[in-house]
Amino acid sequence: MEAEIVNRVANSGLVTLDLEDYYHPGERIVYDLKDNLFMGLILKEKDFRAFLKEHDWSQYAGKNVALTCTEDAIVPTWAYMLLTIQLQPYANTIVFGNQTDLEEKLYFDAIAQIKPEAYRDARVVVKGCSKVPVPIAAYVEITRLLRPVAQSLLFGEPCSTVPLYKRPKG
Image (tube, rainbow, N blue to C red):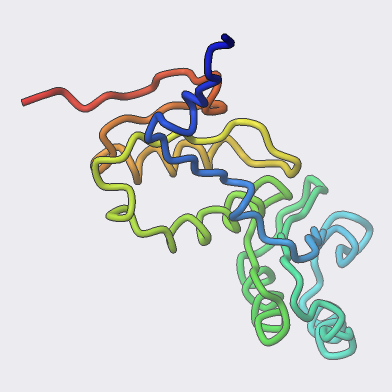
């Protein structure tokens, strides 16, 4: 007689949270202000304002945009503010920074929609493998959000986890 195969993972009571599920599928664009610099050094306000009026901002509709300047130039703060004013009616998200900063913002916005109470007293496994890039900052944020309510936090896959936190008894 063969022994019955028992799925211990299914019977463990673990709740899997996959941050990949919170990935925003929209296109990501890094807008580099270096293309607006005069001789790669300075931003001329008159020329920049003319560019802002002439540029087709509708091409950013629904997209996620990071604003940056990769040249070693002094860019006035108002330049980023003017870009934001032009992009806001079209873009889904706008951040100052690079691609990583944009990805973190998208994840932080998604994680902010999670109701921590849904994980009250749960044994939560934060899934570690994903098909899309999940920034480490997102793992830090979900840990910060769930630690106060979860019974325990683990990282990895339900069949192979790394224990992170277990609420003390008492």
